[in-house]
Length: 370
Image (cartoon, rainbow, N blue to C red; front, side, top):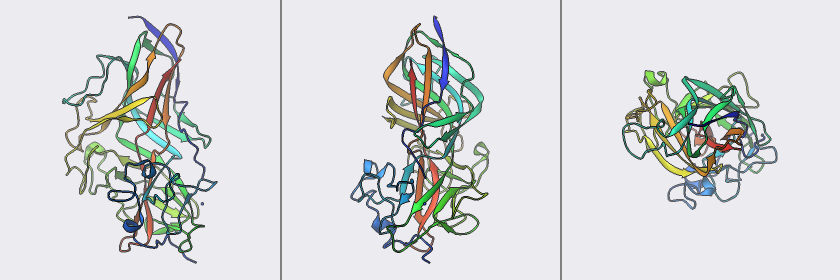
């Protein structure tokens, strides 16, 4: 097979939008969150609508604005009151195992194993996992450390229609978020957790682990036997602390993507939905899909405990045509919206708003060559 050795300018593109960072001591609402929010099932705006799934409104310094009723609202639809905001994290950490370009789709809608070797050429492999940290630069870009590939890579002189990455389903974010209460006469600070209830206009991640569905309980050894935080409105179950400024507890919070379906209750009690079918990528360049895998990196997960890796597949809108004149292959991680700032109410009260976690959502990945 003819091959082409390319210079690997890896992970230079990332956040496609800019994030910059903001008595009556608490975030007090004019009614309950359920009554005030206009995003969600049975509400004015559906949960999956554009008004309910992007960034929340911010001031010129990037602080999330609270409306007069005490709720955050959508950046483009001021009447869309929300209990979560999708923002760009300060830092995002992911563990990568393999990456490849393919002449056929590595995603499969059925079957107990996946095949990403027959029709794919690997450009990266590390069976132990390589930890990559993406740091937002505040100017629409992010830097990566360390580089994914240190030297050039060999790709076939051919046309690639798909790409994939294998990554841990433990996603980590380190993020602080400021809040602007100037439009709210009933409150001047946000509530958070920690060892006790904390308050302030700045809230930040602490070293705790949650799941995408906010499950309770303790994981098994495959996931480190960690206690999960449910975000139930108590200090102990929050993955976020608040104050006037970050302190020594500022750390990475971990989110486990435990299933692509509905889940509730305790860890591993709900059947796992291992596949997420193709959907549009927010950074463009193609559609994305995912499959939860076991530790052998090829068997489809059968429960939450043995699902430890994600196959992230991209169907490329514009296939990558590698020729003798191709000199560079680029991988871009889109951080926009990959931290979900989630709110609840203080346990025992429907009208005291509390930030419960900064959840990590899977990033979008863009593959290009020139």
